[in-house]
Amino acid sequence: MAQVRGSCESFCPDGEAKMRIREKLLHYYELKNGQKNTPGVLVKEFTRSAADVKMPLPKEMRTEAALTKTVEYLLKDIILDTRKPYNLVYDFIFDRLRAVRREIVIQMYDARQKIIQLEPIVMFLAYSRYRLCGESIEKFDPKICNQHLQECLTGVLCCYEELDGLEPSREPTIRELDRRCFIESLYQVFNLGSPESFARALSLPGYVRQDATFKLCFDICLAFQQGNLYKVLMGFPQLPHILCAVATIKLQAIRRSLLQIFTHAYNNKQLTVPVHYLLRLLLIDGPTGLQDQCRHYNIAITADRKAVHFNKTDFNHNVELLKPQHERFVESKLKRIYLPEVVLLKKFK
Image 1 (cartoon, rainbow, N blue to C red):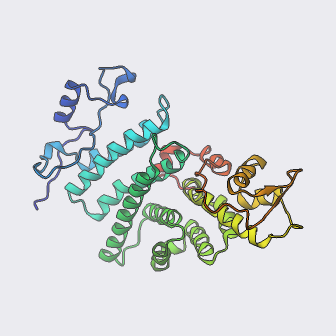
Image 2: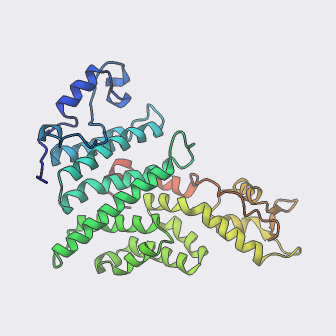
């Protein structure tokens, strides 16, 4: 297959822009000040390729520089737009980034070119997975987000491996090192408990394994493999912003596992566990959150609400996991960051 290189220097090819303006197919974020029929900045939308569709012409595809600017525009300007709920921001950016990913494939970019485009997409999907975790399925589908995040993560990791093979003696720049270490850390946290991700961690280059953030993530993953859930939970709040946010997607499952362990360890009518201890152990903000957990799994709380009484025969194993939710220790971290800097991997702490 002949390699095609885009020649369009705009966010949206001229032909598509004219057609969508004519047919009034503009998205809210492509309208000037949100006004109907007043075009603003158009961004190429994602379209599925059909079997009978010819290869796009160079003028219908964006240059590498244009793709980079498109990603930066979406993750600087649109991601901070607060005129509409974030799930609508997510939908628009998600679609437009899929178009970027499609052009990367069509133009057969090399590993280094792919990395530049895919790393920020990974960060956007990771942030959005947490930000929208409490939304209804009508507004946000976590399975689709997980699928695309895993695909993009895998794509980036494959590019890292390809470069390691092509340039085994080359030392990465500080910038490249920071970005790779963060993405490798994200892969570990997102796949907590996966044998494949754990095996990958053991085979990474030394400069990644020695990175402080990666070492923390690896220690958490190792503790999980060993069944030390206490150490896992104590590690979560130490993680930086997006890593901390992604880790908490697993939090409800870990809380359930610990509560199940307690139903066996403290299965005695004379034994109770103090509420304040469980709050600290389970990373729960306050008594109401613990009460919700106990109610959901049919665990008894003492009359004075200062302790919990565990009974293994009463524990409800059949209910679904509680949905992930925004956690106070994550929110405090996210409030201190400038989001575009983080998703564009310009700041890591």
